Image (cartoon, rainbow, N blue to C red; front, top):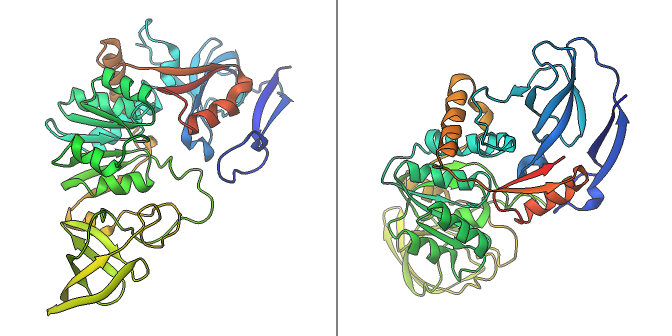
Length: 395
């Protein structure tokens, strides 16, 4: 009998995961039935979405009663955090027959696997990127973001990437990013984005969400496209998701003319940038209004503490983005899950990624921890941004 080790969720996450959320259990697996295989994990993927669903692992068939998967077959399986598991073969994906000997097998969980496919389809299908365009990607040194930037360069784009350490910024420059910056150390994210691309951005590949995305979206070009892949800034949030729209780009605005539709709280355009005017953080003494059909022109002096949420003057996460930005810039935003693409298109994408890596056109970096017992530590470290490239545990 085989003893299988499994990490289970002892209690649901409340905010950032801790060791107390996880429990290591050992169970004895039953004998195989006809049509089943016994899998042993070789590598286990570590990804942000694992807060919500099972992670893939790279496994070897150690015993088989299924002729489609004889012993020794290498597969990718959605088995979760387990050392051994039994499968009836449904959902197992074999390693491509043309896999080059020089490529590490673990890349099937990274650049030539789900993260690579996510970058491929998000950039080429959702964003529909074209040569000569400017692409912005955040979490750019991660498993998905690093591939997004490199594919964009292959397609003739200017690429701007944001990452969370100087080491990661240096890595992005090595990969060929035109501009890379540490979003944790820049004085102003808005200004860093504007300096990187004064004309704005055609495509935005979003892995982060939150305030970061609100700032990028306000700098999108007309008819810009946004692929919403992840929201890692929100995954450890506690409490309900904030509602409404936020005040953007009002630093230094004093006694400027604003245009507001209707009375009371509303939206306003200042220097072609959208803001929210709210009575509490805004001093509206001496407001001068001139009727102009449904629109009013007002002169207002704004006094806002920009260290707080500019609408509520508290510290909640930023909601967003302002719908007026999306409307008037005629932006297209689309969320996606990579399992949408199957069959021939998926196989073509895998072949493209495999060839690009083999030819040195796409580089990769793996952040690998050894030992099945390190799964929770690897997961929490990845959420903190400790990994450079794809995070993997070697079982």
